[in-house]
Length: 407
Length: 150
Image (tube, rainbow over all chains, first blue to last red; front, side):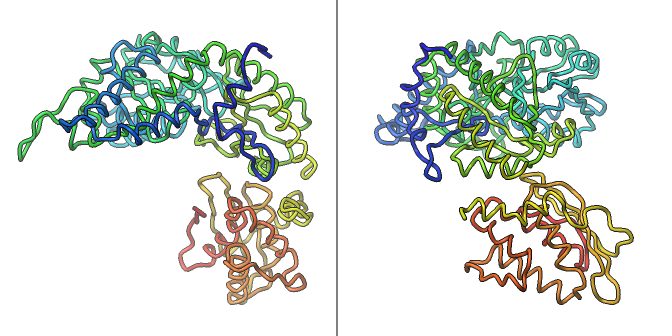
């Protein structure tokens, strides 16, 4: 294990990690569902409410100007952190789900019957259902790239599914259920060769490794703040300027208008066009604070630490009898999905909980993937850079307890 | 016994490992599908009614130990009951699982059903235990339909 990584100091930055569950120290391995928040994020949000709270883009008074400044600075800070040139390309949304819906809504009118949208079978419901609704409305055909037995995208099949009718390819950067890191640059290139727009769901990627989104070649990239150690209810949709500008408003009302008449209105440019009403100001500030914090820890060191932890967990859990690891891609983030021959994932989850070990059990909002794999669900331990080898050992001990009940 | 041993009693684990009446019931007179969309548990309950009482009950589907054991226990418990008896039994079990009052379980009267009481201490798992019973109620209703425990 990377000895230079100051794990004790980092854990001390996350207040919740010191609490107990059922009398035992919490082992939080459900980071794929949501991540814990460092003191820096909690303090940034609390400071905003204590010292700067006001509505933005409205008042001429001092506080409102301060809040507006803080909100605008958050957007600039996040743009810089995710590697995009212009803050105006960063739209604040509620989360990844809203971002996909915003794009699906905005693109809907462009589709003709018979057009195709290319997805993959590993998508989260958030990147499936909005396209299904669009497809039903517009007579669009949905195509789904299959996976290899290891849980990687079958790239030959993906390439073959890119065709002249492919108007959009929408795929995840990292599988939430398997941990697979997809070759998104290559996938983007293939889709672009067919003239398709490309949307990438980065909800499970952004928390795990440094990103330069503008270098991926895609048109849209999106993620949720709460999975990247920031507050919930805030997320980011990044879009290439020309693409964002071509989208109609998603919701309408205050703040997104230029001029309102009684019967018609004109709309502002992005990002304001897509941020109707009072936005989640404290959320944006908290998310910017999360990126500050992560840069302080160091993305490369975090990633290396987490990869070693994943290797250790894969070996320890994999060596338990009756365990099947689901998802053995060459490139993964810290996600370990597995099944146990004798126990259903929910039973595993309940027993682990009594040991203070929090994991996710079930279909992970990826029912088509589970169907593709022929599984009712899996148990999933998902790691962050604040998890430790000792916690992996606690997971293994808790799994041994499951086996004592069920084997 | 700690809470976990209350939940995974030998009776539950036994029914999970060797469920009673697992498989399609043919012929059957009523059936319904029960589904828990949050966790993906899915059960199909089939029963055969003859001369006003349930001659047999069976189930198929997949789910956790609790939902399987509960279905298995149910297929034993409702056999031979008339409509009124089935409705009463379903009511008792739902009260046992979800009632406000801590249940007083008569082991002699309830048999294996008593083993389901341990689920009460695990609120997220209560819906696993109720799924089979809600599904049976749906199967016997005027308009059988699929039910959902969410």
